[in-house]
Amino acid sequence: MTVIRGAGVPVRFGLGWGGRIGGLLAAALLAGAPAPTAPPAAQRVRLETSAGPIVIELATRAAPLTTTNFLRYVDNGRFDGTTFYRAARAKRDPKTGLVQGGINTKAIRAYPPIAHEPTGRTGLHHVDGTVSMARASYGTAMGDFFIVVGPAPYLDERPGSRGYAAFGKVVAGMPLVRRILGAPTWPGGYSRETIGQSLREPVRIVSARRVK
Image (cartoon, rainbow, N blue to C red):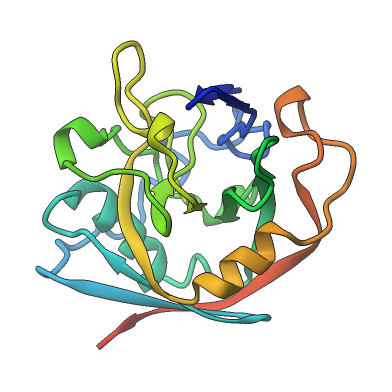
C-alpha cells in the first residue's frame, strides 16, 4: 500500500484496489477478451452517475497506453454499474485530495494490467481535475482510476518514485467530484493507509460512454 507524502503534508491514499489487489486479478484472467483499439487524437468520455454527470477529456496523444486501456473498459461496458467508492481527504486541507472509482475488487470485470506510463514520459501533471490510474505496484493498473481535487505534485514522477499515470482531466462535473470528496466515510478501512476513506454511500457509475 502506497503512502504518499508531498508538499509537507503526509497523505495516506493507498491507491491500490481497496488494499486487496493481491492475487484476485491474474493477468490471464481474461486473456481471450478482444484487444483494445487505438484511441483517436481527441476523445471525451461521459460518466453518468447517480449524482450527476462527469465528463473526462482523455490525453490520448500524451498517454496512449493508459487511455487505450481506459477506453477498452468504456467500450465494453466494464464501468457500467461500478462506483466511486473512496474519498481520500488531505489531513491539513480536507477540501483537497482525491476520489477513486472503477471496478474495485470485481475480478470478472478486469482486463490484464498495463505497463506504467509515468508523467515524466507523458508530460502530464497531477493538478486539480486530473484523472489518473490507481494501482498497487508499478504495472498493476487495471480498471480503477482517481480524480484529483487540488494540486497534487507529489503524485507525479520524481526522484525515487515513478508516481502515478495521469491520463486525462475533468472538463465538466468538478463540483460533483468535490461533493463526493466531502461525503461521509466509514471510520475503518482495508488497511492503515485507507482508514476513513470508504464512502458510506458510494456514488454509482450508471454508464460510461464516449462523447461523439
